[in-house]
Length: 442
Ligand code: XLS
Ligand code: NI
Ligand code: NI
View 1 (cartoon, helix red, strand yellow):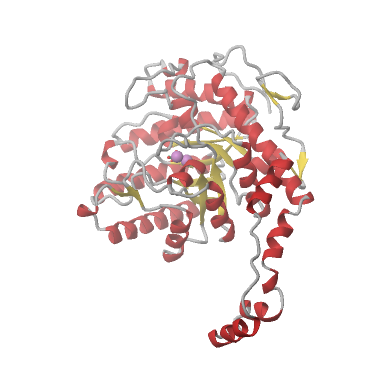
View 2 (cartoon, protein in one colour):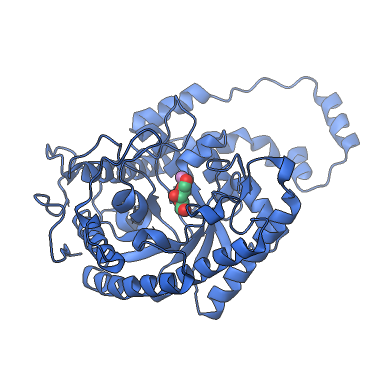
């Protein structure tokens, strides 16, 4: 990959970030992420498939409900929307290539500002698709997934695909069509649906059943259109329990899987799991990963972390090695991502205002994942981790336990076995031992 700088350099004084090894003292270098290092049969680049997120890194200006923007972007200055968007894209590709990120992800409105005119929006997006094609070709950066923002515009205040007003739903359809066209034109490998407002604020005014049926119809229409245009990639649903809705229909992995099954969408859709969404749903991220892996539906992930002391999607950059090792154990044992990768759906803090802060954030995230990958692989290759778990279930490997698994025992048979064998011996779950085992390998 070569560094791509547009007409103007936006991240001055920062060169290509390189791997320097764990002993390096350079804050602008990788200590663990060595893209060509082979772990468990694949390079780190192939395992991790890192992506930069357009919305947080190049649009999120640090504003919060209590205060104005603090990130004053040099690329956000020009009058003309398309010209302004090209500057932003120059900045994005400069950053992506300096960071050595192989992929990026976007919403339609991240790339260029939208108006209330569908046709004008399509024209704008098309202009930027043409520009992105050149940028992708000269840099080698690829599109991991595209998506449409169906939650920011005021018309979507009651949802898009689940809006009680069909007229609003039709605008969602128009936006998804254009976003799909853009994703396909750019060789996007996947397409995401995150339904922030596909839910309700109060049940007093909501026909939940009807809204969910509309959502399923909408997803079928989008899928059918994309397939007709030759899209071969995977569609991902990104679960989240709430925020901005009080309740979101795509609550968590298990809920989404049952929705996909009920509405016959399992052939085309998988999951894009986000760390902070898992914790909002009252789960660990590892729980969500395991649910997806067990269903064969782990498509991709949005990397970030929440704050233990507050209950919203703070989207901080990931840096907790213990949590990521536990996650990588599940991802590795599950055979990796099906089509997706690791998208940094994370933002630097409002008061992180140096040019270098965005780099530190991504370096920390990429290094922590790379290190977690190495540690998890060591645990799987060299420790008793897997054996301890397998041994726990040994009583089902033969005899009556095996017969039970095979569906050959009745309830009367279970009683007979209990009577014959008396009280079971207590067997430890060895949780603390296993927690220590993880730390030995870190
Ligand atoms: C918001 C979501 C969003 C999706 C893309 O919480 O994480 O950023 O990833 O629409
Ligand atoms: Ni996300
Ligand atoms: Ni999120």
